Length: 135
Image (cartoon, rainbow, N blue to C red; front, side):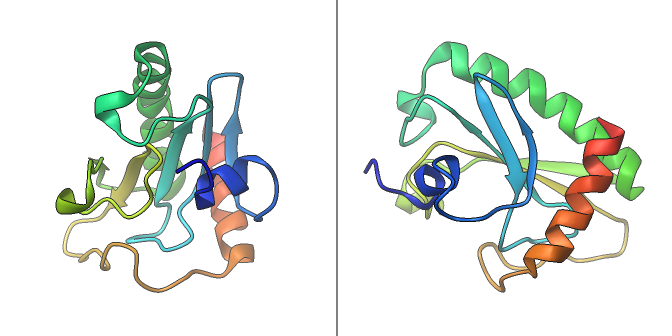
């Protein structure tokens, strides 16, 4: 369980479109986005899911999620931000490393399917730059 794609992203073994990093968390663009700006936040202390996550890590993630949601809304002129988190395979979790999804939404525009269709890394980095500027 300690060799997920998120472990590899944190280790720099897999490229990503980074949004933010500090000693507690790492935020980056989802490589398989449901919408433009779909972002993920992970703790630096590994936990497979919410049920086993470190309370301090969760506090940092929820506080930062508000900042990130505000930045997404501003940078992308989103009508809303959907916050999603899955726990266990039965709930739809596919990467067993605790993570929170922040998904910008627009009125009248449908979301793509969860985990389907990889985005271009350069496009993700451009969107990340816009979000970072609004943080």
